[in-house]
Every structure is written in structure tokens, then in C-alpha cells.
Length: 461
Image (tube, rainbow, N blue to C red):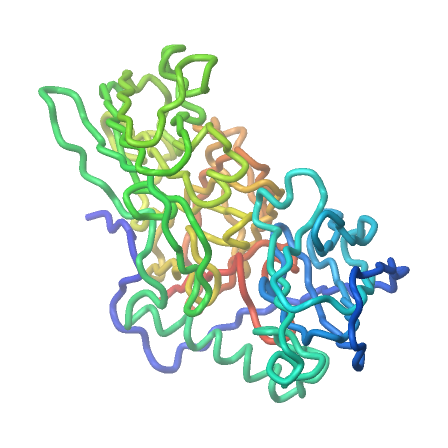
């Protein structure tokens, strides 16, 4: 009997199992030239406040900065993303900003003392604020806001961490990750859960509701998200070649929406592109898509195609796995897997995530020694992600929904997955232990105080 892994559940794992999740973090703090800014108004100037800001793709950390009124501010900015970013503070009708900071470099921004109040911070590179690179600078009374002079709310000052503190952070993250195998998910709800269709005659019907919500990517870290049926990624949908499928869509968001079926062959009026193939589905409205499944077995995607930089970035994507009509996966890949797993790579307003979660809340992939594991992978982010599996060479057997002929399959341990691409890989779980599986753009995966973001593990018991 084939065992399909859907959520973080497995039999007890021996206490002696040790995770060897290794890596090396690269965090750049370049020396940039400071861009000075003049503040408006008259202030009783106090001691300067130094604030540390980290830019990633696509996030400002911390999102909330605090400084006392009457104090000039120096923002020490480090760009740990893969794209150039700026940092800006909006004061009335003026915007004070750095020049574009290259990936791995740094800069400073000096702002004169401001009146008490809240000010917007953002990256001014076109489109980046829409992807989540915004925040708030709260300037308050020096007697209250300045109690932690020179500090930033919620920020971890890695420069002051001891070696023991750094090691402890790594160790705790690994322990929390491993604990999910017996205790269940660290962060709920979880996405990518299988959804059984209702039948209307011979038609498989999937009822999907799109909504705005707050989504926790790991304990204590929550962001505004958008979801199908309360899940990020949306429900895992399985269909067979030859099926007729229908999608009943209800838009409960505050903005329009359309649904696109990425990679599937559909009639033109089912393609889901606003004002090209259909009108937008307005808030409160319903829409129906219906078509036959004519494509080969493999992983396909459903996702928003309206304001997609924001809507997909915030979680409106999900998997449609087309299963063989007969004969199981062995009829396609010559092997019937014991464990089958679907994984979405994503980056943007929710940070770097695997199936909507960030390590240590990502889901372990668990197999018994000698079992075959079939992993479907899709990238619905905006960046390339080279996924690297420790300890194994996997076989790439499918790409973009097309099974590769035996002579075209190839072995790898690192697979670069571009935005919009999908791959199927097969792994023979021959070696017991826990083997890291992570994005090898290391700032997406590990920092001084532990692993985060796009890290999971293949655990062989």
C-alpha cells in the first residue's frame, strides 16, 4: 500500500536520531556611503539614536522601528536580499531615502529629529513595497520610547551574540523542527491539505473561497496573507487524466480576483486573465471554471492572476496534481513511490517559505529506509531557488508536467527552480538519518542565530 504524506505525522522517531542540518550563512554588511536627510520642524535635539535595519526579498526587518522624539536618527541598513533595495522614511510630503543598495552591501541614512508620530518606511524600488517591503517608524516621547536607547523593536542584535548564544539558537530550532515528527505541526493552520471533490454526475467539483487573513509562518511570526479556503498554499487537488473538473469560486476579499490554471491546457475562456479572457471577479461575486483534464501526469498549479505580485506573493497558489488514469506512478516513472509529497517554494510578503511555513515550522519529509519518495516541487515566488538535498542524489523525472523519457532523466543533488517552474524528483531513501533539504541561496536559509526560511529535511527512519 502506498503511503502518501499530507501533514507532519509519522510514527515515533528514536530519541537517538540526530539531525545534521548543516550550512554556512552569508550575510553581507557592506560599507555604503551615507545619504543625509534634513528633517522638518524645530526640536530639542538629544543624543543620536542608532537603528539597525535589514532588507531582504521582500521584507524590512524589523517592520516596526521605535525612536524618541527630539533625537536625530542614524539608520544602519544591510541588504541581505538577492536584489537591490532602498530604505526610505516618508515625512509629510518628503521622502528621505538611500540610493539603491546592492545585494550584500550596506548604507546609512541620517534623519534629523522628528515630531512624535508614526512615519512610513519602505523600499522605493518599483513594485517592492507592493510585495511587502513597508514598515513603520514610531517616534515617541523620549522618556518612554527611548528606554532602550539605540535599539530596535523585536530586532536580534547579532553583533552582540556570544558563540554560545548562536549555537543555542541553532540547536533550539533543530529541536523544534524534529519535535514535529511526534508532536505535530509547530504552526497551525497548515496549507496544502488534500481536498476531496464533490461529484456532480461525472464532474469533479472543487469549491474554493478566496479570503484575506493573518498567516503564521512560524510561531510568533505572522503576516497579512491571502488564502484559498483558509490555507497557504491552497488545498491540494488531485485529478486524473480524462476527468472533467469544475471550480466554483467565491471572492470574499476586498479586491478583484481571477483564477489561472498554470500549465494546464484549457479553453481560452477558462484561462483566467482579467479583461483578456474574462471580467474580474469582484468582491462578493462568484465565478465558475470548467474543463477536461487532457495533460500528462504531473504537478500543475492554480493561482491568482489579478494583482498577482501581491495576491500570489501573499499566498494565493495551490497544487493540481494530475494522476495517471491507470497503472499508478509506476506507469509513468517506472517506480511506485511509498511517499509522495508536494512542495511550494515561495518568497515575498510572507518571507522565504516552503508550503507557507518558515523553518523550524516547515514540514519534515519522513520515509522508511529503502522506500521511494516522489517529490513534486513548484516555485510560485519571484526568485530563483536552487534546492539542495544533503546525502543523496535524486533523479529528475518530470518537468512542467511532462514526464521525462528514461534516456532524458538525470541525477542531481541541487536543482535550480525558476519562478513558474515545476519538477518531479525521485529519491531512494537508502541512508538513515535526517538530511537537510534547503535553498542554497544561503541568505534564504540560515543566519547567525539559526536556520530559517527555506529549510526542511528528508528524515529516513
